[in-house]
Every structure is written in C-alpha cells, then in structure tokens.
Image (cartoon, rainbow, N blue to C red; front, top):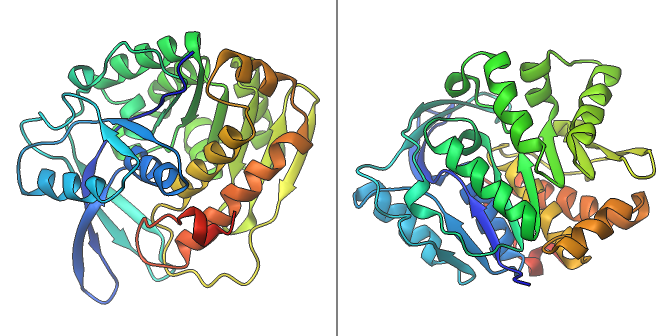
Length: 312
C-alpha cells in the first residue's frame, strides 16, 4: 500500500497591502501553504496545482523548489497564467482577500494510489477544477485517508447555500475535517458554541473521524465522534501576533503531520485506527498544530515552522 502524501489545490501569488502603505508579493494559496508546512515538518509531499510559465509562476516554482520534500505533479506548471490574491491587512494583522483566479487542475492529477490526500479552500469549491478535486478525494478515500479544510472565501464561493453542497461532498469522503469559526459563521450562520458543535456533529455524521474547529486567539475545539469526547484546546500563551496570514494552514499542516506520525493517516488500516481513536490519541497532533500556528503568527506572512523550530 502506498504512503504517498498528495496535496491538491491552488498555488497563487499573494499581493499584500500593509497598513504602512507598503506592498509586497509572495507565493501563497492555502493548499500550497499546507504542502510547505508538511514538507518542513519532514513529510515528503506531492503537490498538484496549476500555475503558469510567467513571472508569478516562476516565483511559485522557485519558492517550492527551496523545499526539498516537495515534488510537483506533472501538469502543475502548465496553466496559461498564474492566479493572484490581493490581501489587505488591518491594524490587528488580519487579512481580507480579493482574487484573480482560474481553477482547472485535472491535467495535474494522476490516478496513482495515494496514502493521504489533503485539499480545501478555493480548490474544492471553484468550478471547473472542484469536480476533479472531489474525484481525486474519492479515489484517495478508497486507498488511504483524506483531510479537508473548507477555508471559505466568500468572494469566490457564491452564496453559502451553494458552497455548502461542495463543502459537504468533500466532508463526506474526509477522515479529518478542520474548519474555522469564521468558516462556520459564513457557511451555516453558526455563531454560538451550540451552533458550532452542531456543525461539528454534522461533519461527523457525513463521515469524519476527527473534527477540529479553530477559533483564532481563543484556541480550538476538538470532537472525537467514536468516543463522543469534546475538548477546548487553549492557544499558546505569550505569542505576539505579527499577522495571521497562513495561520490556519500552518495549523492544518501540523495536525496532519501529528496524525501521520501517530500512524492515524495514510492507509485504510490507519483510517480504521483513527475511527477507533479516543481523544488522548489525537491530542498530541492538535498540540503540534497549535504550536505550528503560534510560530506562524509571530512572523510575517505564511511562513510555517520547520520540525527543528517546533522542537518535536
């Protein structure tokens, strides 16, 4: 059985406007950030995306080639142009986004067996590529495991009720679902703890064996359906936030990394082990995710930690 880890999703260039008037460009995209986060934590990653043979595409390729554990799938660098996302930071460092993006990933996907597949955000909801992503996730679910982060982008995803259908189709083949409280507020109008818990139960009823909701500076909430255990995980104390760009992606890569190391992802046997796991078995992965996010928010941009920085 293969143990290939495949990340599928958008790679683009973030054009960041800061409050001091400065503007800088750097590679981004939620799945790209997760791929880099996993690679820096020591996991070999295959990355399927779409970017062009242009200035921005060359920037993305150079960025990825600096990471020794990332292999691009054939067809990834064959788009006509490279997509961009304009991020505007507020005084707290939080980002809002505007996108110039075309998403069609079919030519970058193959049918090789996959141990673990991660996807999410724009890639899983934007046509025409979303259909190919869902099909890849279904194939991966047959041979291994799947993790999914809705990472909602309202400006690209239409009305919430339209986005929900695609979100729930992905969640139905995912072993792990990680969402933010902001995702659930937009997708389901969920704001209270009870409403958020109802959404988490909904993902579990669709098939997820582990559901985690991040809550910004308030930490995260964890639900283990097999044992009906819930807990709240506090954020790392004393972190000075520079900005929040890539924090959720860093959390996601840390979570997947911890579960991979625990033998709870990357095969059907691992999937069954995850479905039998209790809260104590998954909390070390959530702790790793929390520490990854804390390091990321302490410095500029989507810059996830290495394993040596994490100290684990």
